[in-house]
Amino acid sequence: MRHSGGVSERTRVAVLMGGWSPEREVSLKSGAAVVNAIDKSYDVISIDPVKDLTRFTAQLVSARPDVVFNALHGTGGEDGIIAAALEMAGIPYTHSGVTASAVAMDKKLTKMIAVQSGIKVALDKIMTRSELKNGHPLQPPYVVKPLTNGSSVGVAIVQNDTDKATGPDDEIVLVEKYIPGIELTVGVLKGEVLGITQLKPQNEFYDYAAKYTAGVTDHIVNPELPADIAAQVKRDALVIHQTLGCRDVSRSDFRYNETDGAVFLEINTHPGMTDLSLLPEQAAAKGIDFRTLVVTLIEQALSRAPDNAAKTSS
Image (cartoon, rainbow, N blue to C red; front, top):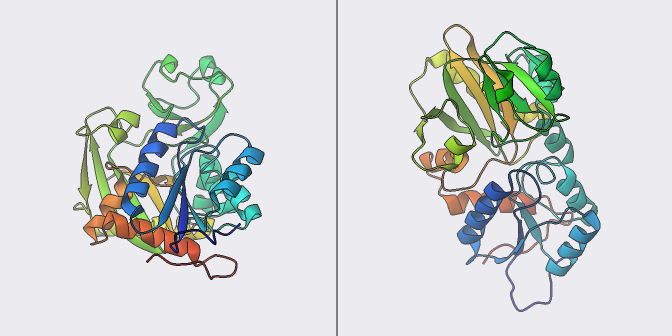
């Protein structure tokens, strides 16, 4: 399904954006930023995937891309489903493959692997939201978050009242001990750590609004931390990235205080690419501008093409 014979000799890039997860709006912003960054270097088409793999395949056939930039977030786009469809179609794509995407999307499974890799995690339990009505599963305060969603959608900190953790009764959630202190996130690009960012939200925690509302959260790139803590979170982020088999990029989140130390929370295999996103900010601090970051991901994907003969940008 290779693009050929058209007017343009440039590489055709299909940017997947939108989708059907609760993170759709964030994905649309990420996708738009990617399109704007590369529209003069590549033959670009944007695709908003439908929740039907047969119809999605038809969208790909119509687009005839050389490579796909997967700017989807959450269910469908980030959990290996779309990646599997692209594998079957023989189209190279950005970000992690099927297995790493599926495993990383499951917060509990990721934490189990992290523990086996010597990475410290917080105490947790798995249950449905309805089971929370039976009483506190952990000593408050604790965090309740969907097992497989990102962008802090549906996340709540429970101090006393479990009614605060609202959502569908049958939704499976991870109930996790609340770790006080500071929020840290570590980006990885092409197998190397980009940097550490400390997040200082005005809200109770780094929730959806704090992530995607300008001025609500201060980002401190490469903050002053104890040398051993900085080294630990960098090492842990790289270890979990490699152990899960992630590729191209990832971003791992941690909480830190002097008593608990640095505690791993989760890994994101499709970090946001909006104007408020953390990974592009870390890349910029290392002299990698947004367009270069996007092109790097595209070229990484092209290098994985079955025949390794896709056209490069002009």
